[in-house]
Amino acid sequence: MAERTNPITFLQQVRAETAKVVWPSRRETLISTVMVLAMAVAASIFFLLADTLFSFVVSFVLGTGT
Image: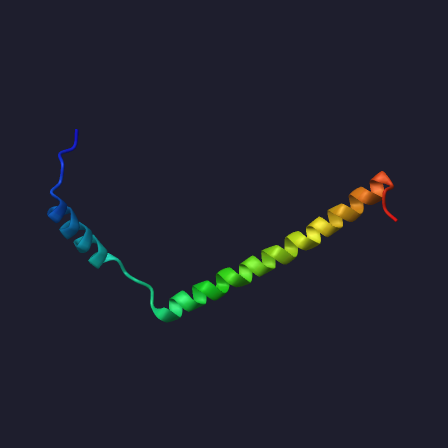
């Protein structure tokens, strides 16, 4: 079983590990955010078109279309 760590030691270790992290710059964060939003919009449009197409095909096949 693992031995228990002193809370002070744990916090020191957390701080040391956090110092090793390479944080993204403001520009990198902005570019990543814009890319995520653009991909979300593109995926939304794709699935809207796919759903509309499938709806049309199913209603045509079943004869429930107007």
